[in-house]
Image (cartoon, one colour):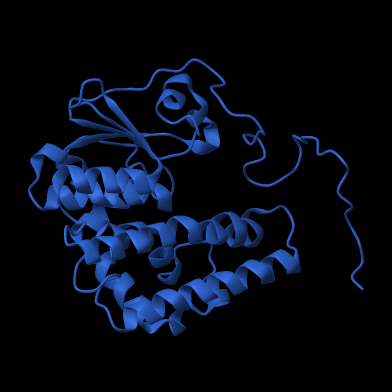
Length: 282
């Protein structure tokens, strides 16, 4: 019988000193914490984000649209520093009451359309510009299957494995083992799917790839949680092939820079307003 080290109280109470990298901003309540305006640019779309995997989903689609020559998809991207609590400013909360990045405004509609949740942004833009989301019913459904797979599966990778392996103030065997097993199962799901498909749903590059790659592509390319050796990511050969293929795309290279605020200064881009912003960074 396992030793009991923690007995939950009858009623949970918030402890501001609960540890971890995000302890200073996490609260059990929603809503704005201060009055704060958001900047605005001249382009049709205003994106407020950060270059986390969820943020890269949105910038990847924007950059792919622009790569296709769709000038109507031009956007301004502004950094929302989640460690600084920018996501709790009043105007950001007006766009996303859940205080998570990315969040977007489409200024071409009257009134302006707010779009939050990365999956919703992908579907909204793909439908608006009629690309990267197949119109044929079976392929569209398969794309949505994998988009929703990502939305449902990734919390086990990020909030589960990533938290306990990388961010938690102490290492605990049980949660790390539990979430490692699930993440490796998910990697195997993707590896088997990509064994017989060039992209996630087949020969078509879609928003399903754009949703999955910033998380699982980054993981198998050794860019997430410093966990490549621990997870033996090199053993997922089909997933490796797919991740490297997307990584080589010019739009993907740009997308990973947008709203990046860490690493070498030459590889940071707090704001993005035009293609000129990438000069000297790629």
